[in-house]
Length: 396
Image 1 (cartoon, one colour):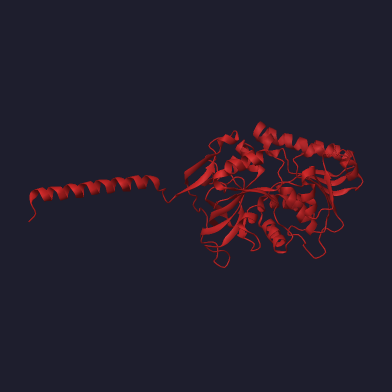
Image 2 (tube, one colour):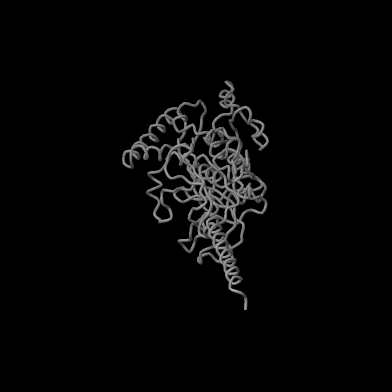
């Protein structure tokens, strides 16, 4: 039997070891994130870009419908709508649309389009359709929590399998801008069927479209869509972007700072559609010297009027605005002035997927930033005059 002093010594060593081990476990547990938390960027109130904050303890989204999927994000783009929403744009209408507990206003995660991997799916989605582990691309409606975090929950109708021809970076940069352009041209502009022709000849042959602001995210995709349909495309951009738009296949590209560009566009004759991707707005249609059947702008005052004046007064102002602009346009022997919107429709996703598979569409990407530089991406988008899309790579 060991002497008592040896026993006391051994007991002291065991006690010290146990104390250190416990302290180590406690210290380690403070560093380990709970399994139901994720990294992401969010805002807690509307305001300037400094409202955007990183958090490593955002509650992970959960499925609330059998037709939803949980996606691990690998890449996502930053769009002008993200910056606008930070500043409060559309808050009144979007709050009225938030009917699920998971779609609370704050804290709010921005981000509309993404590429990633399915990690969980609702029982209403058959395995032959989509399965865990599938690589997908998708969009998030404006009233839902976005994809500028590690995971996002989306409805089945808002995503599909990622085209094999696209990298995750390219796939994340198409759908928001692409669906905006698609809805403007096909839903508002009635350019053709919602799924498009995409025939060897082109469903838009004989039509003429002018794209204002052709070098941004929506503009670069719009001109590719139009060219794929056989449309005769005219485009405006700044001088430093002219060559880039010409490289997409546009023959008639005009520097909007050139005093002669208006005369050159006038000489082209009447346009079936003028697509405003430059944020000029509907009143611009009453001032331009070019003739058109339809002028479609994505700079609609609808949400802003409601934000500023409430639903009743805001809708009255919207009706007055579109009526006034159309009366002025028609009296000047031009056609209709119309508003276009982002529409997260499966028909649009299918159309864009068809374009990609036929080699007719690739995103123009200005810059790829790592996940921890998300605020830099917002800042660049806020500065405007983009030359394509800003993309976040979540794996760098």
